[in-house]
Each structure stands twice: as C-alpha cells, then as structure tokens.
Image 1: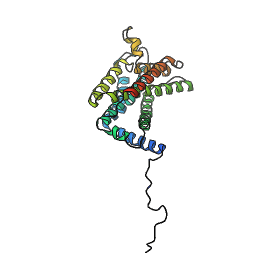
Image 2: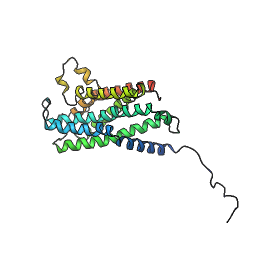
Image 3: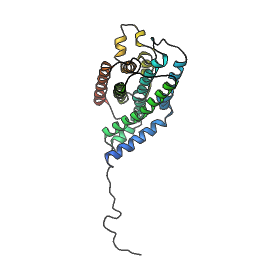
Image 4: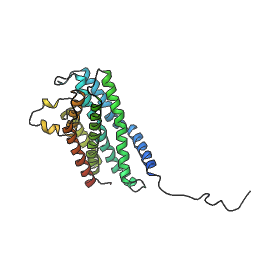
Length: 263
C-alpha cells in the first residue's frame, strides 16, 4: 500500500455558499413542496375556488347582472385564487415560519434575505399557474368562452401578475407585523370579507352606490373587475384597475420593507 503524501488538493475541504441561481432553485423547490404538502393551504388554493365555481355555476344563488353565470364567475374565481395564494396562504405560512424561528435561522444562513423573498414569490407564481390552468380548464368544461384577442391575453397576464404582487406585499406586511395566531385569524377574515365584497361572486353594482368606489379600490375589486372587463366584456386594457393594483403593490411592499420583523 502506498503511504506517500496525498496529492495536492486531495481531501481538502472547500467551504462556501452555493451559487445564487442554485440557492434560488433549491429554495423555490423546497418552498413549493412544502406548500403543496400542506392540507390547509391546498384547501385554500385549489379546493375552495374549484368547488365555488362548480357550485355557483350549477346553482343560481346570486344575480350575475346580465352575464351568463360561468362568464361572470370564472374571472371572479381567478381573482379569488390569486388572493388565496398570494395573500392568505403566504401570510399564514410566513407568519408561522416567523413564530417558530425558521425565518431567523434562514436569515443567518448564506441565503440572502432578498433571495428568500424571491424564492417565496416564485413559489407563489408556480402555484398560481396551476390554479389558473385548473380554474380555466373547469370553466371551459362548464361552457366558458372568453372574449378578446392576444392583446386581451397580455392584459389578463398583467392583471394577474400585478394583483399577485399587490396581495403578496400585503400578506408579507401582515405576517411580519402580527403574531402568527393573529395573522391566521386576520388573513382568513380578510379572505371571507373580500370574497363577498370584492366582486368575486356578487356584482359590485348590486352594492350601495356610496361604497362602490371603495370596493373597486380594494385589490380584489380591482382585479376581478379588470379580469371581467377583459374576459367577459371584451374591453380594452383596464388601465384604471392596473393603476389601483400598482398602487397597492407600492404601498404593500413599502410598508413591509419598513415594518417587517424577522423574529
């Protein structure tokens, strides 16, 4: 057996952080698996929107203001799906990660904080892509036929992305400032309120005129009205709705950057 000195570099440790793209891919994959394994999150992101769409199309519970039920409901349920993932699910999951010290430990790792938040955002986009395909597929099976052209498709994409960012900023703000239990209660309460008051299943025109501008100014109201205008009415780019959502993006992320606490 050879007992000479080892070749230069053999068995020499090389500590150090992985490359940023590799860390981002690994953290995004981990966050996505964690989300998809959580039964409560799956209930919010997949089961409730699909059941609501199928049930409300089959049973005429609410007046849809002259729209065919499926044409009115699909844009609203798409808005609900975006809210459930970007706001409710993200807020609850981040709140409990903060409570149990997960965020504190990750913040002390080689993983940059901005990359952790980016991984969470990419996880949300992955889940939302699945949600949109699921809701749109079910809607098509129920007779939904959206109007518009390629420009309409770009407008829908802009609405979904801006709405997702708006809800994500508000979700992170809630998760980073409230206790986990308070976040759980508040996020679910806001979810239920905006389900009713955000134009998801009840047309905003059926509410008193005095509060209609306030409801359209909510993230859910702006998103659902914008989607409905493009997909059901065939109108042009919904600049006013995009402007409202962009305002919520700035407000949410500015407040989260100012007040978010990692522990």
